[in-house]
Image 1 (cartoon, one colour):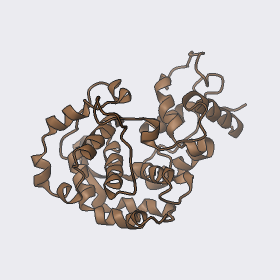
Image 2 (cartoon, rainbow, N blue to C red):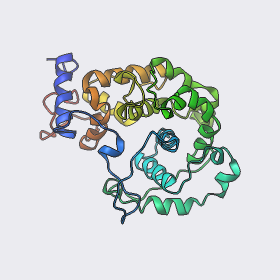
Image 3 (tube, rainbow, N blue to C red):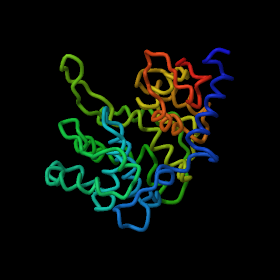
Image 4 (cartoon, rainbow, N blue to C red):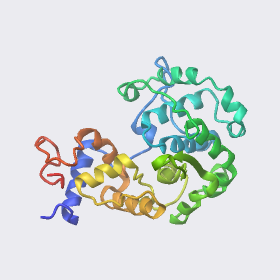
Amino acid sequence: MPFNSDENLKTLSKLIINETYPNSDGYKGWFEEYPMKFDKEAEENFNFDFNKEKDIIALIFLATIWNMPNYRWENSVGLVAVLHKENLLDIEKWSSQSFIESLDKNELVSKMNNLGSELLGYRGNLYIKGGKDGVFQRLNIVAREYDFLRETLQIDEILKGNVPKLDHNIFPKFDNPRLMVEVKGKNNNTIRKPVLRVKVPLILRELKCCNKIEISGEYCCVPDTKVKQMMKIIGYNPCLDYDTSSVINNSKIIYKYFGSHYDLPLFDFSDKCSKEKDKECDKRSCAVFNYCAKL
C-alpha cells in the first residue's frame, strides 16, 4: 500500500491519536489539555474565559507571540499567563511605545519561570525575545490594530453572548499591511511578514472549542513549522509555503485525518519522532513504524 494513500493516512492518524490522545473524543482547549497555575503555590489552574475581553486579548497575544520563528511555544504560553495575572493586557497601554519601554523584562522572565506548570518546567528556562521584530514590537502592532481585529473576529458579538459565523474569508484579512513586522531576510534584506497569518487557526480553534464562534473545523488546524515538518516526514504531503492559501490547504488536510483533535496529535507526536528526514528510520518501537513514509 502506498504510504500516501488515503487508507494508509487514515490508519496513521488513528495510531498517532491513540499515542498522543488515548481515550479522548477530541481537543477541549489549550489550558484544558495542558493545565497551568500562576505560581507553584496556587490552587486553581489558569484558563481562558472568553466571556471577558481581557481573555480574548490574551488569546490574540498568545497567537502573535507563538507565530514568531525560532521561538519556543513555551515562551508564548508563559508570557501570556504572566501578563494575564499581572493585569498587563491593556490594549491602550500596549499601543504606547513608552509603556513597552517601561516594562521590566527581567522581572517578567522571572515570573514566567516561576509558573506552576510541569509541562513548561521540563523545557528549560523561558525568555522574552527582544529586538525590532521581537515579542514586544509584535504585541505593539496587534494592539495598534486591535479595532480592526475586533471587527474581523466579531469580538463585540462574542461579548454580547452571540455566536458569530465565520468562514475561510477571514484569512485574507490578516494579510492587512498594518499587521506586518519588518524582519531580516536573506542577504540581510529587510522584508515584511504577517504577525498572525499562520496562527489564525489557533485563535479560531480556541474560540470554537469554547462555543464562541461557528466555523468549520477544517479552518482551525495550525500548520506551523513543527506540524508541517511532521506532516512531511510521515507522509501527509503538506504545502510548504506560508501564504494564506497554503495555511488553509494544510489546515484542511489535518482536519480531514484528525478531526476534532485538530493539529494537536501531530504537534505532540513531534516529540516522539527523531525528525531525521534524510535517514532511514529504524525505531521499530515507534507506534507508526510500519506505516510511516519515513521508512
